Length: 306
Image (cartoon, rainbow, N blue to C red; front, top):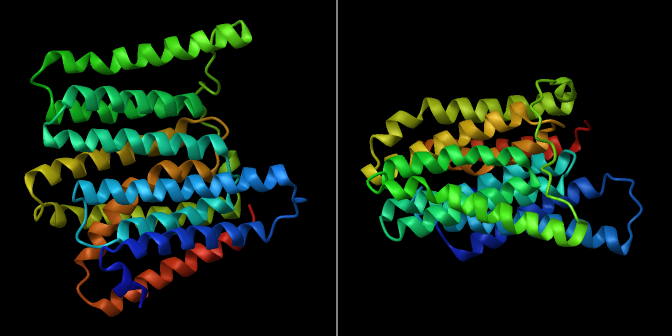
């Protein structure tokens, strides 16, 4: 039933995806022993609203750039992936950084229209820089931006300098604010590279690692056959998504204070690539079995303690 619903692109699907996000969030909250206060209520509600906002943004990016068929599977898988985020050590800065990275990726992918390329490059760099204020290694997504420039806007040499100008402006604004308010220059936090993976050795993180590894492998194995069917512009968009996925993986591997919550940066590109595989399945029964299995695993993940 749920497969038939999300097999069509309707506004109600966004409501359902939001309800799925809320369901996963509440599952985790019912297990916590925190004493609920007014401030904690608004704090946690903020998490949920940002997650829903990011899901709406994902759906907009997919529809605007025709990254999938006329369905809502990307936003559905994105919502299911968020079950893993709710069950981990939720970090407000990560969910904000992810939201700004999505805004940046939206601009990068839209470069294929060849309209207002300089403005889009500036905006993408701006959003990535803002994301780096919340999680420094988000700055790695500049690699995705420069790939977008190579693919869509390399004919105008000034486009290569636009991201640097945008980064300089963000740095000056933030530094000016810090000087006025705190009488010091802005210092990025957690800029070190860590190869200590001991924090990921819990049963919870192992389950999540296996879950996402399977989805990633399946998505990439069946991707070439799907790409051949895409229009040239969409093929390049998928290249951008693959590089974004690689960058997100590197971000997880080198960031200090590692946790499964950092996988949030993978959710959008992975959901899009997995949808490409899912669309290839022609038998509705198999689609339903796979979808319900993913939903079941996502719910189980919520009940596994780290």
